[in-house]
Amino acid sequence: MHGLVQRLGGAIDAFRPAEGAPPQQLGAFMRWCLRGSWPALTVAAAISALAGATEVVSAVILGWVVDAAVESPAQGFFAAQWHLILWFLAFYLLARPLAFGLSSASNSIVVGPNVLPLVLSRLHRWTLGQAVTFFDNDFAGRIAQKQMQAARAVTDTATEVINTVFFALASVIGSAIFLLAVDPWIALALMVWLVAYVLLIRIFLPKIRENSAARASSRAMVSGQVVDTITNIKTVKLFAHAAFEDRVALQAMEVFRDKSLEFGVISTWFRFSLMALAGVLPVLLIGGTLMMWQQGAATAGDIAAAGAVALRIAQMSGWVSFTLMGIYTSVGEVEDGMRTLSAPHTLADAPDAVDLPRVQGAVEFRGVSFAYGRQRGGVQRIDLSIAPGEKIGIVGASGAGKSTLVALLLRLYDPEEGAVLVDGKDLRRVTQESLRRQIGMVTQETAMFNRSARDNIAYGRPDATQAQIEAATEAAEALGFVRDLVDHRGNRGFDAFLGERGVKLSGGQRQRVALARAFLKDAPILVLDEATSALDSEVEASIQEALERVMVGKTVLAIAHRLSTIAAMDRIVVMDQGRIVEEGSHATLLAKGGLYARYWQRQSGGFLGTDEDDAEEAAE
Image 1 (cartoon, rainbow, N blue to C red):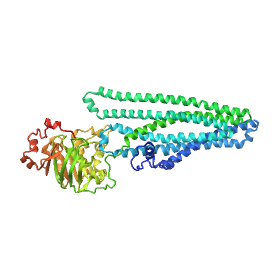
Image 2 (tube, rainbow, N blue to C red):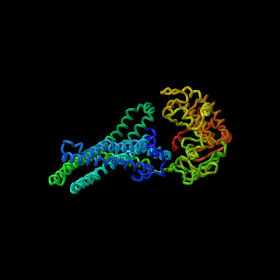
Image 3 (cartoon, rainbow, N blue to C red):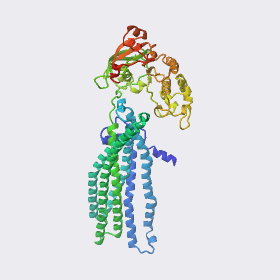
């Protein structure tokens, strides 16, 4: 039995990659989401239609039994009608349960568990390929909500179309064929009723779809607002702004409530109208068959069968209308998610991009300008060549362009003018993943996952052994506190979880974990963006020794406000207002008496100070 379930469950490859970009038209988007699952969906639809057809067969058999009962004497009925009784038992005890069981299995085992991860994995994979600006311009919670909402809505649409639409179509078509055999006029009455039913649906469902999209959008905004507040909960508490955040959340919830009320009103009118129309059908079919019976053109069995068909379709119309309302609700949610998630990648690999093999580490900025699409800020006309293995310090006031330079090297953005090259290769001609594998980075704001310490450190090299992980951790002066970690689940040491964004660690501990990650990655290019800023002097001294060891043979770009940490670099580049204004060794720049020398002279506690003019410069 387990093997059968496994085979049925594998009928759809739940994690098959999508082909191409998601389209921005609804029908094409749905096909993109479901591509690869159509054979299984088609089989499931056929089985659902078979189950729907059994409803008509059930009515026909009921009519046969009634006619046989009317025409046969009570005594000896079972002996005389044994063949009919056999058909009756075989249908109700074997065929009908089997048809419904297969229909249930196709949806519950084949379709439902596979379509959701198929769609979600495709949407998530596409979203991961977006440029950082995509995430900068939205709530993290809202994006996650859109992914789950769209995947669930596509899945619900597919399963409900199979479960309801194909089931109902088979039932209605079979009913029409049966009634046509009784009397064409009764069949015509059913067709007229169906036309009225379809017209009513066409009036209401577009409105339901529109209201559903608005409700889904407002619901995602609530999620985004709540997640944003929870993510920054320490800031909320430090500023005593719980009441303020409550008001902001309530405003978003009020919009969602209003949209939900609008949706509730339109759905109530829809259900009421359809139920009123459903009541007309038994009157038409049973009344028409009674008239035929009165004229001798129909039997008592025909009346029973027509009544069973009428009542079943009337009941089904309520079920179908409720399901169609759900389908159109899902379609509205798919449209809402599609508008956010199907945005084209603004920073994509070129069609002919190649993987960058392990590099020597030569870096060149050739006439590079980038201002984030604005008139000022960023960097302007940067020409800088860094030899393999050369150690470069980058200094400058806030807004000078230091982090922009690093972001361009990592190809988080493409230059608006000029080119960035590594080992002579334009970064726009190589794949982003292969480029970033060549670069290790430690930043001032260290990123941590809510995973174990081992997982966070091994993020630099997922296939690393425990011995390699421990060696990197020790080199980063982190082994002592990592071994002492205990989380709320009782996990200890490398198995302890660090909390969301590493909140269970101090700033210095987070930075040492990030250093361990960079040590383990052992990339030929190393970027240090205030890598030791959160460390105390004693730990920093030992970390500096470890950094000197790990920098051997690597190209290094180190951004620092604490000038003493980069004084020993091979070369120091001084940036001001997006341009390189000075470069040379520490001694050369001091002797020159320029901007670097002024920075050095006004240091307080070893940090680069900023004056009022610095504060007015554009933020990166």
